[in-house]
Image (cartoon, rainbow, N blue to C red; front, side, top):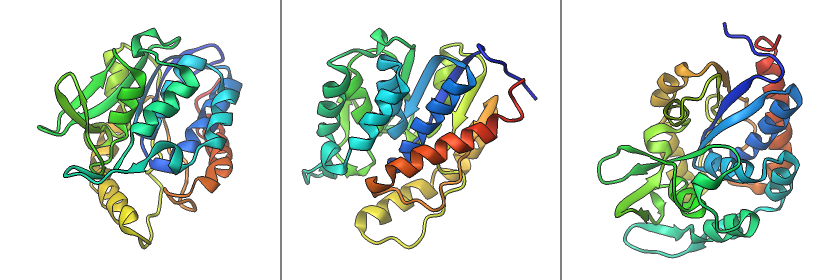
Length: 256
C-alpha cells in the first residue's frame, strides 16, 4: 500500500454524480487540511465543474461558497430539441461569472476535463480551449441536455467513457493519483420523475466500467452517499460535510 506524507504531490480525479458532486468540495477541504499538494486535477461531469473552479481559484472556501449558492435554475433551462429536453448553456454563464472567460491551459493547477464523443463513444480529454464550454460538454447527460460541439465533434457527458477521469491524470504524468467515486456506495431508489428515470438508467450503465477504471488509483475515496439524492441542491451543505469526513477516514491508512 502506498503511503503519503504532508507536502506530497497528488493528482486528483473528481467523478460525476450530479448534485452529489458537492461532496467533492468536502474532499478538497480534507486534502488541504492533510497538507497534500494538488498538482494535477481532472474532472468528469459535476467533477469537471468543481475541478475547473478549484484549478483557477485554488481556494476551497471560495468553491464552497459558490457551491452553497448554486441551484438547478442557475445551470439549466428548458430547450426541447431533437437531441435533448434541456439546455445547459447556463453552465457556461455560471463558470464565467465565477472564474471569467478563461482557457483550460491557463489554470493555476494543470487541468483536464473529460467528455465523450457521442458519434463513437470514445473519451475526449480536453486540455485546451474554453473552460466553460468544456464543462458544458462534460456534464451533458444524453437525452437530458443538448450535446455540445467542440472542434467539430459532438460531445456529451464524460461519464459514458470514464466517470472517474484517472486516464486524464495519467496522460498528464500525474503521480499519487487520488480518485473520488461518488456513486460506488449510492442507493438509487424509486424515481419520482422522468429526469430521475433517465439519471438512474444512465448511472446503472456505468457501474461495472467504473469499478475496473478506479483500480488504477493509488487512493480511492468512495463516500457513502446513500442517504442523498442526485436532484435536490438543498443537500449541498450536508454533502460537503460528508465528503470531508469520509475523505479523512479514507486517508487514515495512507498518511504517515
